Length: 528
Image 1: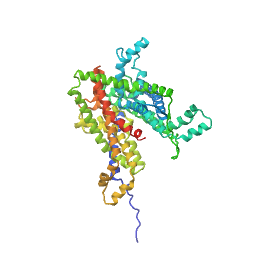
Image 2: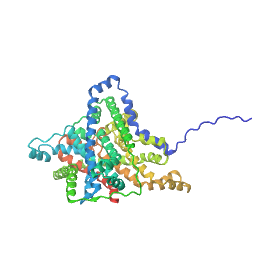
Image 3: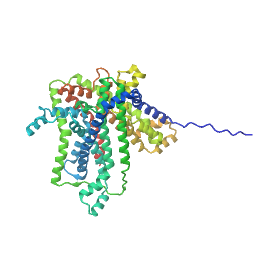
């Protein structure tokens, strides 16, 4: 007789691509895991002390700042996108570039420049005294930091809303006008509801930047979670308290992301591919004057004044022979870290991007979310996690350049994953299958077929990581090797010491170094 035995259960098959993706995700989650473990070292009395002394004030400062900056970015971004998308006027392309250029200026550069300009001897300070006869307003309060972060962040809202407006369809507006709706009613009842997803996405980016900003709040001495975490780590060396504040900030960021995603998913609009797109109408002379008055005012404070200040003070520094070998050493250090971090990041992001693009599942989706830790954790928190991991497991590399590069990889890994995954989704799977049917192995197919086909996404990912690494300040302050200063570090140090002649060239070099991102962002505009 044959005995029937139950077959042994098989373990789920995990491909090599999935195993590599899991390893990358595990490494990216190291800062969060160590922050969680460190926060467990706080007992109930320590948590009560944080709540009684710090948390209520930090909650109020951070949330009120996020709300005010979001409101300011909404007004500037939506209004600028509306006029540029719906009106044809002289200088329209120039206006688009001026609205995007603030992305090239870090928040701490904005803060440093305007603290100088608003002094009694500064350009704006002297103008204020001449016009109003009183001392210029202070920037070291919530109004000042809101002004700075709004100038630095409204471009995110502008870009997403302008893209949504460029895909708007004419049929809905025509139907509303046939029913007797006025232009104002069409905007509030048709246009604005259809723009809600784009506005929500732009404001989400703005709020996350506000929650994680360090440079501007540190220069203007405005207490938020990020600044307090840095002070706990660098001033008091209380890593457990810093981890506790980090966990609160992570919970706050995740709560906001969940709520934003919930409300945005409830606002869905599906258009017809045959519907007519709305073409911009030629502006009248009065409209052209009003448009340039408003856009020119925005560009004046967000681009023209900061860049002019950088160029004038950089020229003075050049004449005084202050741009010496040391300065170019800071440039070299920044370039070294940015190139190394960008190169390692695109290699690390590739398995996660390809795994999610080719094997859509709950596991691949979980990998995608888990690898996005850099979007949730600010720079000081990531530095804290990397530092704790290195000290506990590989203390030999502590204080070296490798630690700083690893922190940058974790910080900006989501940028590289999303850029490469977007490119991989446009690659037809049958091309890879054809390569395998012709005898190509997995590595040969990757090298000769997949990588050349997604080369554009890889280049975009490299540039994005390079640009953001070039501007990163808090993680560099905490993890840089002794004597290894970069351009952001020198701006922060020289701004603290009021050495304007050295801060301006460093700031200008950052802007020049980040100009390529404009080229990548404006490619769709050129193609249109």
